[in-house]
Amino acid sequence: MKFGKWYVPLVIGIIVGMITGNIVIPGVSNDGSNPAMSSSQIFASQNKAFVPPGEHDEYYMFASGGHSGQVFVIGVPSLRRIRTIPVFSPDSATGYGFDERTKEMMGGFTWGDVHHPALSETNGDYDGRFLFVNDNANNRAAMINLKTFHTEQILGPIPNIMGPHSAVFVTPNTEYFMMATRFSVPMDGSYQELETYSETYDGALQAITVDPETGHMTPAWQLKLPPWNYDLSDAGKGPSNGWAFLTTYNSEEATHLLEVNASKNETDYIIAINWKAAEKAVAEGKFEEVNGQKVIDPAKVPGIVYAVPAAKSPHGVDVTPDGKYFIGSGKLAPIVTAYDFEKFIQAIENKDFTDEIKGIPIVNYNSVLAAEIEAGLGPLHTQFDADGYAYTTLFVESAVAKWKIGEWQVVDKETVHYSPGHGVAAEGDTVSPDGKYFVALNKLAKDRHLPVGPSHPENMQLIDISGEKMQLINEAPIDPEPHYAQIVKADKLTPAKIYEKDENNPKAVWSEEDVRVERDGNKVTVYGIAVRSRFYPDEIKVNEGDEVTIHLTNIDLDQDITHGFGINLYDINFEVQPGQTSTIKFTADKPGVFPFYCTNFCSALHQEMQGYLLVKPKQ
Image (cartoon, rainbow, N blue to C red; front, side, top):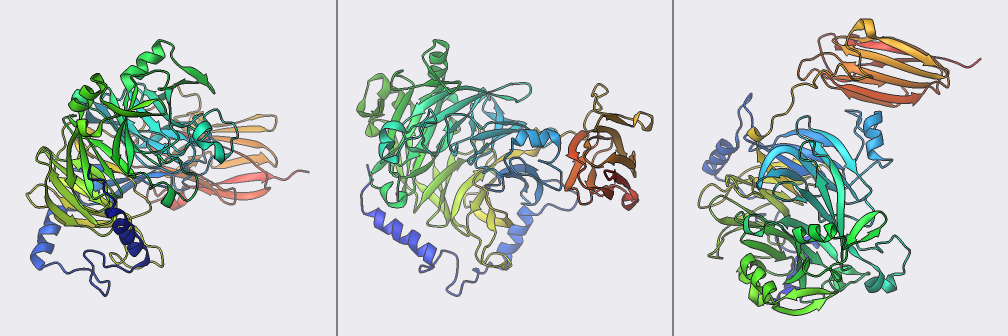
């Protein structure tokens, strides 16, 4: 192994320098200004990335919104943000988290931490049907239906896991998506002192089945894992289908001062999971039930989990499109390690283990090693193109390295601005990447955009990877924080133009004649419609203290004609898209006269689309 100690102080020194500003960042002059591009470079870049008015981007990019709790939809190559999809946080523009359906779905939480979106797959290719995301903050998972670009299900909080940062990745036919935990806690939910961490705390992986028709999720089984921190993961494909791979750091099992104490060991691990063997073990009853979940302990059920040494503090593992190699990178090593899956299976069959840890066999590193690629400083994540090349982000070096699979040599580097975490290539997680574009998701923007105070946006940069040399051709600021993204060909998606008219929906009415207000004691239910440019009814009369429910249907069955419904001083605003019925419930606790109006511009008479909520005071 080239995991020598010489590079640790060097890398730590560079990181400290970047934080304090005492080193020169690649691509920036000493006065902090941007390096100049020649006029020919500028013309070539603009020409490749330019999407003329009225024309559509070739790709959708779905990027995590980090602690905003949302998902960003971005066109590639333009890098225009097309939509923000609310998932784990309320959104007043759409009423997400305010109407009854989404408020119930959010379960009382008002924020989440989205890290790693994963598109549904068929035979290892994106199928454009569903998008799955995790909530690192509250142990939840969500499914977005790509027909409507709406969050359709939130699952959780899921018992026994804590901070599923390692999520989500889907298996090649979306049989499962899986989430492993960043944080270890006592799996049974009990209170335990940190002094007993190694004995009483556990990591965990949650496997979730996906309904192939609806995309809806159901918890299937869990794996009990050592009390380490688990990071971004990937599923096998082709010959490695049936396996999953996770990176893990803090194999030191430190609980304090992790920036020092979780970097002491020369290696951490990639955890390899035979999920088909786990599935079989559950069918055979080889699990314990913990908080209603089927939990497999791999120390008691051998043949499911193996550990492979990796350079310290790895941040991700990626499986090559042909499924023959899995690629790991340690943040504190200047190398990328390629592991040969066939050799890995041979090592298991030959019991070629160097040790075991927590009952998990440690596979002989030298027996499974394909190559160590000297990529550069701070390697994090790797993506792939259609011609056998890999692209690894270099956080410390502020660059992307291009290297050849099989030849294991870096052939090109492109400086980016600055400190890329994740990167994403067009269809780069699939069995058949496109190989046209790579987007570096940079953590820092510094001087790249107009200054907006002490905190700057993050920075997406588009790199053309279609030629022998990479070329930076576009960039755009983005809200914090795209941890990860996936890029899918636009023609794989078939978004709905309207919600299909549901004549059997008991909450919906479709004509003025059916509009009504019903009272049952102090409960008032409104069955209303929104249509350009009128609400029916446009007068809602209730008594102070009434519980008011409004079912509002948009009967404008024409795409992009969305109506909003906001009530002054009642903290209510929600939208109804064409053909949709939304429901809001509130208590009329303020007497008086309160206008309501359409909050989403819909027609030339949009301003006239209003009405009154009359709340008669108690006598």
